[in-house]
Image (cartoon, rainbow, N blue to C red):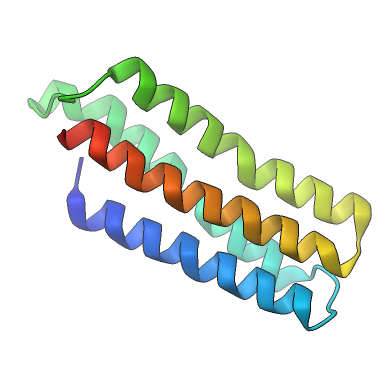
Length: 119
């Protein structure tokens, strides 16, 4: 895995989480910015999925459990869309907080995936 990309990805997920939580605490309903920020996390996770599939063919093997890595990746891929669906169905200010919590969880999973890959 590319270390710098993973750290940037974790930083973006953390920034999105803080943004969503602040928007929720400011009593704002979910809007295009918070939903778009979650979409950005999803796009970065899809790039990470492609890199994880291609990397072993380039000689960059995972040093940890590959099964655990892909479980984290699949769960991380599911969290942003589920949080956005929750936000669009509920449409309350707490939906932003739910999206922020999902983004924080994804940030933690990204760092854990890096640890598994480079263990």
